[in-house]
Length: 175
Image 1 (cartoon, rainbow, N blue to C red):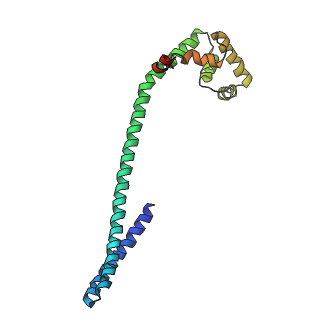
Image 2: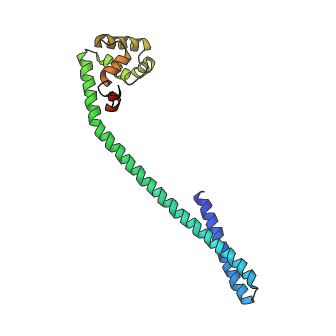
Image 3: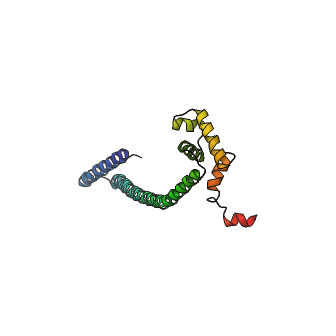
């Protein structure tokens, strides 16, 4: 239910409670029968309960929203801490990869292609990013494989990632 709908319902219930209250006061002065006063009184109490219910529900929603926002802030904080912590490892990995690409005597263009291959891009995507033809990207990727002594993209990725992705001890012990 939207905020406007809640306010509208609360306004209607408040008006009902006020009008019933005034009617009960005038009925009491006029000496109206007891059952009539009980019915109108019940209507007034029902309207007051509705007001109480909506206010209580609104307070609970605000608390839930506040808790969710706090949890969201905490999760963002944890994510940022993880990124900060991981950044030094990522930086070290990037430097190690660049060092190995240099050891393989790759040109600057071949290094760019190698990094894009490691990221999983297709030759067409590499050509688009580097603003070359797909044939040029293919020739440069072949040069990367040739100079590195690797047979293809899978071996290139495995060369850099194999030691990073060690199986868990549980998996090793099961073999």
